[in-house]
Image (cartoon, rainbow, N blue to C red; front, side, top):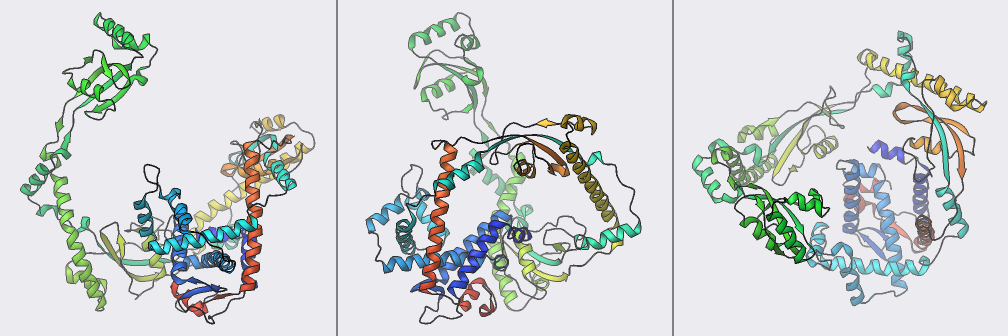
Length: 634
């Protein structure tokens, strides 16, 4: 995943962003120590400090969000490898610059207005839609911030917003820019296309040894074995320590009796209802039922489906209309009621099924109850053993000694790669797998590691026993895979050549339907589509190709599942720009924001240069968990 991030840094958007970031640091200048600064701060812009706590909170938040997108936790070192510290520090430096300018300009905000901003924040609304103090307190607990710190943070934010709005708040994107963007986004195209599948290409003859060796040498990195770590771990959690065999039947029965309702399935009734507009029509329907009509007959007469009438299988007290609820459960057997004076009007109900109250016998749940009791009892044992294990490790004991001393079990899984697989490519089962793998690869043989929390009540300790270095696999070890890959590559090459030939035929005037029929496929015509809407029948690459030239353009590109798509642009429809159109308005709003942000960024770069920007590399390195902060390159 991190490789994908590094590859993403090669896109033009990332290059522009990184260039601006590097340019900003070049302008600011970075000092290794503060002069007259706060030694507990990571950086300073003008007279405004970026505290270690502020940077740590922001960096942890960004690291956690990045880990969520990648599907596994990231260490600070991994974040540093993809430039996350620079991004966080750059953003905080921009905030600090605006804060410094706001202070210089004597920009402020009243306590009343600040309270209003916080109380109207949608993030702190409760179930009623109003400000909920408990929600705010929970947020402060999660981000490890006091209320005073949060209020001060929001005050500085409000002051920065005033400066930013004063500078760029009313700036609009030039109309010619907006029109060009609309033209680009809303232009419609129709294409005819055919799809060429690898199945249309015959497999080439098996490669000889020379060909195989040449292909292997050219792609050797694809066949390397990754680095593996062989770990041993000790898992302590209530589930693994639980001893259900030691729970007596008497204890389990006592728990069963105490939690009686837990094992009772309450009475339920399958209910349908018809709500009538007035008492007269309800009474007329009731009279018909008494005369022999069925509830279904009344539904049909009133053009109501059974699904619309059904309330489902309900428990007593669960129906919104209490009158209907009481009437339904007062019926001693299935049938149709008389007219009920319901909450929403006169009602007739049909109770078609009655499921009587039932209690699960003790013998059926005894095993589960014993397991639950044993697990609860083991919770305190986990905490006691945690302290004893930590004391033993503090005294220099290895895991093997610890498990022997306390009669525990050490686990010895197969060596594991960063991808979570063993030497044979099979998934390795580990507790808290993502975090354990990440920390194992940040550790080494002989290093004592902190325990990892497992769920809410467990812990796992691990030691790296062996590092199996990454290596090149010899051809003999991967010959079968190399041969398969060579055949696929040759077929892909032949498929591209066929697509190129097809393009040339169409350019020379051949009809695409006739060409498709000769190739054993069919030509299809798309509906009109734009760059933003795309076309479900085309890959993203084919959508891009569809906008690569004027009407009549013929080209080919990669489709889905390794196919080649040959397409012919049939028509190009230029949009009529309607300022009132929602899409047009969204594009304009987005461009206005882009122009405003661009102007604000330029302003921030200028004032950062004037105010001066310094970084305390020692504190920064400490926050990032690096051994030598002074040598950390930003």
